[in-house]
Length: 74
Length: 372
Image (cartoon, rainbow over all chains, first blue to last red; front, side, top):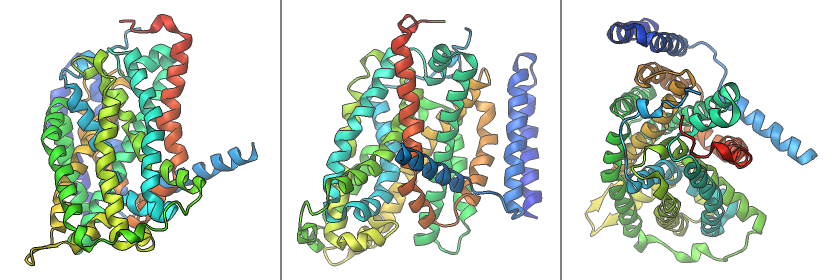
């Protein structure tokens, strides 16, 4: 249900925004909009579906510790 | 090179004071909530010394950021990184900076939802709060820099005044002996505390994206001193207030000490529960902080993709922010721990990148102020 709500919201946003970006000079803006929207809606739908997504902060912490170890070794 | 597009993307112009207040709010909104407990953990009753050290240490990178902005007064960070490092490396550096800002924006959303769910409305789902603040911020970003800079000009002074009044109201319950014995912690501990605070100060690097939109960017140098003063007084007042009220051990265990401080206030025997006031002002300032980071993030994305306008990216990025704010952290305690351990990466993104650009600009003096 939540996933459907997220996807419907994404479609609604696309329906409202895309006609505004229909001009030939806005081709790049249209593609950027579509790609980011697909990414965003996909991510939000995955969260709504409780998919086990990797938590970015854990990787950032690991990277942080790796840099600290590197500095210590120097 | 044809990449100079900020003039067409952002039409609004802000004053020096508006920029100083925006940067001060961007830093203070998070600092006030989390750092008293982080500082108490590192520096105990000497946390106030760490605040002074942080202010002194923070002036150096702050000056670097403003000097970098002054070298390219007509351009924002993405534009001159493209000029200095070439189109690919420049865009890559810009993108790293932009993604870091958007990531911070996502945990600001999480902090916002976390405070409200933990302490105010525990039965409301987190997503409801996150959705509300992101929609509000998206609207602000859509309206542009000038709009939220003006709102911030009204809100930020009110935020500082209310904060100081709340701390002053708790004075009768405070015991300044809790700050004794002074200077008990070694200098490295104090510096660690100061660096923790500077970690938040470095979020002020967002200034690199806002500098060219000043009415007179060449007169921007005093901003760093204005911001330092605007930050020092409220942070010092809150840290001393919290330590004198709860003591260093108890403060270190708390997640939101300012909120706990406000809970203890009871004025004239009838005025109590002013913690709602803390939530009220924090909701406003967190929204404005989110707007600044969100705006700079989408502006960078738009410039890296050579777009004519950043607005098509505002709503799609809102989905990403909401999703990231929900799945990245499982609790406010996790956010606090993350903030206390991640300072090295913050240094790299918000100090390393500007330092690299500044050094390169010294070796390429011909690019200074060049107008494409």
